[in-house]
Amino acid sequence: MKEYKKLFAEEYAIREKIINFVNKREDELSLRFKEFSDIAQYNQVKILRAMQEEGLKSTDFNWTTGYGYGDIGRDKVERIFSRIFKTEDSLVRPNIVSGTHAITIALKSVLRHGDHFLSITSTPYDTLQKVIGLRGDNEDSLINSGLEYSEIPLLEDNKIDLDNIKNNIRDNTTLVILQRSTGYSNRRAFTVSELKEAIDIVKKINPNIKVFVDNCYGEFTETIEPSQVGIDIMAGSLIKNPGGGLAYTGGYIAGEKKLIEKSANILTAPGIGKDCGLTFGMTRQILQGLFLAPKIVEDAIRGATLFSKCFEELGFHSIPSSKDKRSDIVTAIELKDPEILETFCKYIQFSSPVDSEFTPIPWDMPGYDDKVIMAAGDFIEGSSIELSADGPMREPYYVYFQGGLSYYHIKFALINLLNALDKKNLINIGSMSNFGEAR
Image (tube, rainbow, N blue to C red; front, side, top):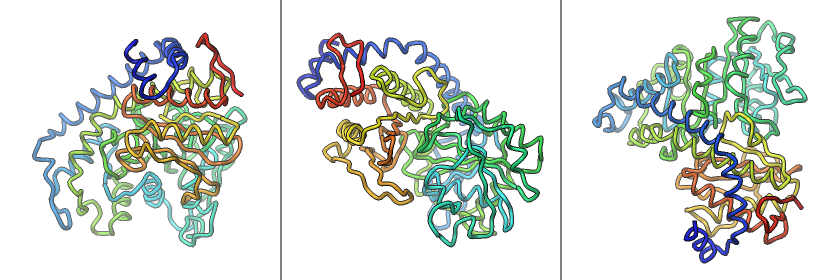
């Protein structure tokens, strides 16, 4: 630790009191860290077993060209994902460009003209609002394509309004959607058990209604996935948790075989479905990233919880708190000050291995109404499982912190950030290094 502090002081001008402050919070989290380790070990063996049961071979990393006919590695990837998520089938493709793209395909696999779909976890994430047609005037939005949409606000304690689900189910309701992660909101992620409680109610009202879960940011944060508690289809991104920081791009959809077939037809074309689609040599990265994902997710959650603990000690509100059960990798911290938000993102960027010399500034990011500031010095652009932070420039100035391929990197970024905030007098870390207060 002496050499550690010396390195920080010489190379980054970090004061010892900052390191002591963070180390003390770290010691206080030892039981939480053990909990995260137990989950990661379970998921590691689960993924290992799926690969063994599918007989993964080195030759599966070979790939074809053109249409992608006979790509046995591609097919094996999808069977492995199906085993892990315990679904009938899955679609895992590099030409799914984002989580929003995967979600849109999944929704379209269920919905037909005149159908009604209902969100029971309030308003979905910003980018999906334009897909639905809640914002913007895109003629290709779901609402402008002849679909009906409604949503149920969360209760005052940010829980799902279970008692109100039945009142919002219509005769033409064919799909209920749930968002697991926080998105740009002020709630924690819903646990799988909380999702199950809502899913059970929907299925009891009408078992023919399909249930979809947006699983982005949530994979491998618990020992079970939403696909194991009665949903019909779910989707996520490979440059978040399941890609383990190695997948260049891509997304997945997992669920009922019939719905996956429809999703494949939407992604490619009817009659082509899953039979075509080049993997561009990504099979190795996808599977190696998947294999590493449980440990990387563990480190990301450990780091996020340390961020929560430190900022709570300094008087800030964190969602989830350092004591809450985790069900995604995202931590929202209410900063209440645009300067603190900009400094936060600036020093996450300065602590990154890539583009560390760049200074993030708020900009008009596609899909968002407010300017967004984003720090992401990633090896894979936009990779949310890597160290990153972002937030809309609107009150109360939440920053959404996620990712980190290594806990030690996350811890360094936190120390570097707190040092900068303290120097600017935006926070006050006392000389005893065991207390602090917000400005």
